Image (cartoon, rainbow, N blue to C red; front, side, top):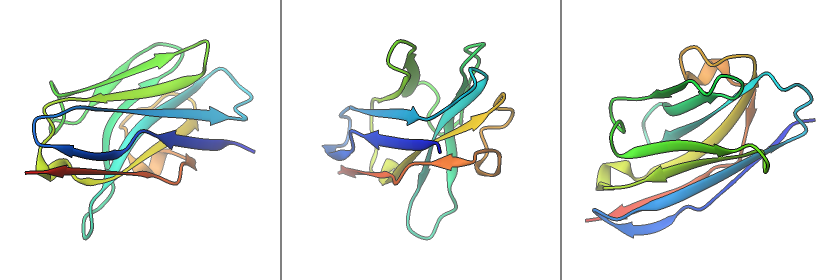
Amino acid sequence: QVQVVESGGGLVQAGGSLRLSCTAYGLTYDDYSMGWFRQAPGNEREGLSCITWTTGVTYYADSVKGRFTISRDNAKNTLYLQMSSLKPEDTAKYYCAAKYGPSWYCAEYEYNYWGQGTQVTVSS
């Protein structure tokens, strides 16, 4: 049973920074991918950034490119999302997800295992 746990959300002023963390427990193969998604009320879930663990290949959505950075700690099996220059429109619930195999499109339908989400609120 794979369990995904994320943390690090909160309230921040526009222009500020936050770092999200995520650990996936129970992955039994080394060939997997992890990613960050977000969903604002009334919107579809959006893929922000994903990484294929074995190759380190990353994907960024245009909406966060240059402001968000995905990284990992292999020893801790932990994924991070460093968010900078935050804007009010970044306000959403942020989810971490995992899947076996490579991440081709950083799309919701690719991912099987999801965390409960952590709220990020950016005030203007």
